[in-house]
Image 1 (cartoon, rainbow, N blue to C red):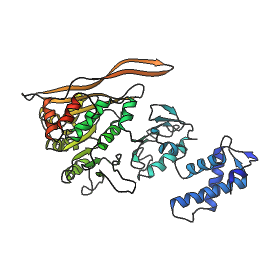
Image 2 (spheres, one colour):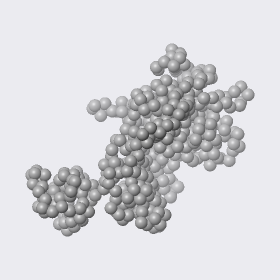
Image 3 (cartoon, rainbow, N blue to C red):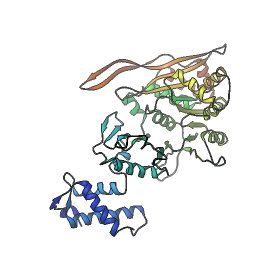
Image 4 (tube, rainbow, N blue to C red):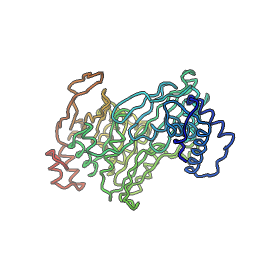
Length: 446
């Protein structure tokens, strides 16, 4: 039956009133659905709701019949109006500042209020608790701050009463990691980097130079690193290590489902039982025995930093990220993290991490919400053992203007210098053809 054709309302009601009425009807008459299959349950529930709306000629101003049914289903089973943002390829973050203040961050840099808001503090808490339930987390007065995840690429951090004002309900940050896979051309068009910079980084990783991508949360580290890993030849084995949830999806299949590349994805497991607790450091130790060509440590933020630099200094290609404000301070950040494992002299640790990660790239989200690789540096080890942090590429901000109420950042990229003869020699030793190295140094396409 085409319910929309029979949707002639005699009385308009608010969405909240219709929701309460439909919920009451379904809970009393269809407490248990016939099918246990999720998709069949969904179809049954939608059919029951549609029939009830048609029989009682219920109508909400501004909503078509189908829109009303979809909103009712999202409210009752899914995550209210958040559902469409959670699974949108154009959304990268949902920030809830209060039940009536929800902001959506889009991949193109726009940050605008959600089209709808929660109806009350209690409504916001109920929906977010439903989200947290996916990862077995509980939000209550005894646990007012929790972190969880929904699917592999969605992180949730929630603050509830009494940490937040009761009349506001909750505050939450829902971050959708890498909602869309970007290609080399996308980074160039978006101004994240030049084609020469991207080719340089891709080839350096391909031929065995370890590197660290550094920057603040939301600067685009994971998205950029995901692309770099996607450029690794299919015959090379990639081993990824991530904390709690998996953000990378590097497996490539053909139209018949045959896996074409060589990837192992792993995540940590937290447990109060030491025998069952598996952190990034432990996974990294096992990864070294799994014949990896490239090891990806999703983020260095604890003692795994020491194991990562050890792996990089012993012939393995390692790519990782961390939080720092520049390429130079990245090394000091690594030193701080390494001291969580061993009490060693800072100067000794500095020498270790600079040897392990000769390349560092600093990414930043600018005032106009654009993302830029601000600098790529090489740590050059001088004959006397001293270290020199040499910029290879950099982005210079020329002006910041406000045009029609929007901030516009203008700038440009420049190549400062080539990589050192020492790193050129290492690339050749690792199999890079001389012709390709020559082309790279001349700034041509790799």
